[in-house]
Amino acid sequence: MFTICNTVVLTALATIPLCAACTPARRIDSRGNEVITSINKVDIQDFNLAADKLVQSMTISGVFAKSPNQPAILGISRITNDTSDQFDTDELIKKIRIALLQTGKVQISTTEGLGGKAEDPMAKGTRDMREFQSGKSNEMPRMTDFTLTAKILENSVSAGDTKQTSFIFQMSLTDTNTGNAVWEGEETVTKQGQKNAIGF
Amino acid sequence: MPRLLQFNLLIFGLAACNTMNTVVPLSNAAPGTPGFKQIVTNSWLNSKSNVTDVKEDVVNGDQKRVQLSLYSDQATPQSISYRFEWFDANGMRTTGAAQAWQTQRIMPRETIIITGIGPTPNTTQWQLQLLDTNLPWTQ
Image (cartoon, rainbow over all chains, first blue to last red; front, top):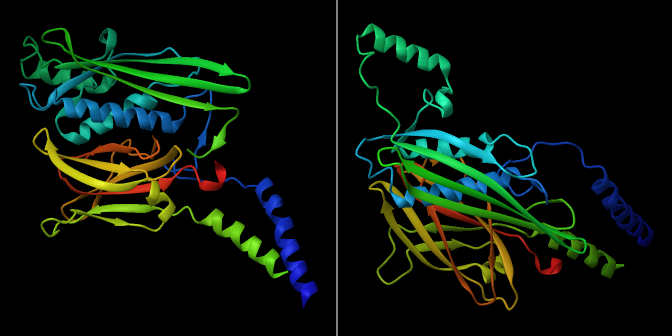
């Protein structure tokens, strides 16, 4: 009996490192606590965290709720990635757009963009055609009430083998009627460690 | 031999005990009692993130805002993670674009304040989920 129990326990113990060493690929919750945290890269959870905090700050400020035009129209202006990590800034901006749209107090313009470029050229063409056919092409269309600009910065330091990287997400909201910033927000995500890890 | 088995069970037990604590508001709380309920499945986590106060209000006319005070009874700095879940009047879950787990450092005997805003105007109910990020044997 003793030998059987001993064999079972020893086999179980020997299996643990083998199982840990050969984790098969699997899908995980991208908002959960199993995602990989990297030191020198902006992770998906960094975008989630920054977007969540910045939208919360923007919402509490009440700038969209106070706008004379309801819902207010927001245009997306220059978004700058000044970090050493190459990523599409839509990873951040799209989350903010979705969260703002859900509040019902703002709509995002896809026919007005930076440098006169429409994000959705087909929608712009259809709107222009509709205005031309209705004889309103000479009238001033409703412009964006606010524009959003953002910059993402990086600050890295190390002490011995430990690295620390801060990603700073800065955002400004400008009232196009006055040309003045009516809200500004900054969120810093700092990560420290020697190597990438799974979890928070 | 029984000691070896006990040791193995302890290791497996510790690895599996990072369960979640949940805080829910009580709509029918009696006067003088807390207007919330803590569902504690992890008492270690509760000792470093005990909810002591909950406040609710409405911002921008229709968006629910919740503020919770969390107290740590521990003698060393701790980390916790939290996430808000939001529901409409029918109890249906409303998902925000960026509702993710957030990590928060809490110092010894400190009370921290965390805030959440409902993602949509029709959000009326909420719950807070708490999870441990540094476990006693990893410090």
